[in-house]
Image (cartoon, rainbow, N blue to C red; front, side, top):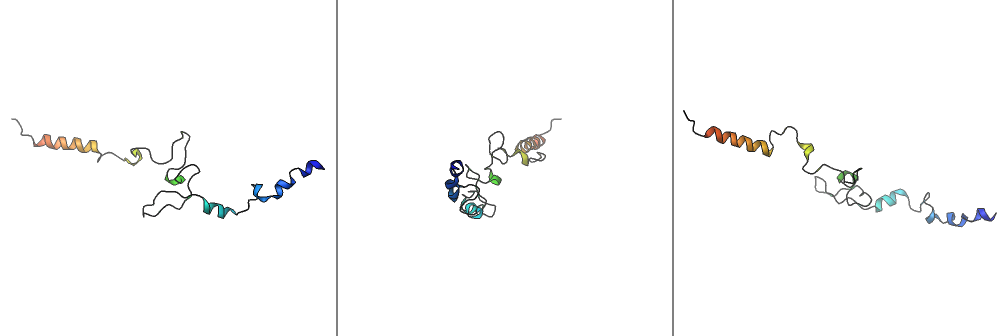
Length: 106
């Protein structure tokens, strides 16, 4: 009988029982630190921050397999569609226009 009473006092204390916490889930989520990012309208993001980060999973707080945060890579290579208006193409086109303006030799 003694073996069955060992953990009985600990489980009666609700603060020690992770399966039945004292405060409901909604109250714990409301206390979670918020993401520090700003939305396009200028208001702060209302999502909870990822544990150990200052941003939520949508604003770069998540970690992937390589250990880097989520989001677009540096330089935003994903946004390039065709390169017709890239800095390199504009420089080449400016050189072509300047070459066309040179006086023609006959």
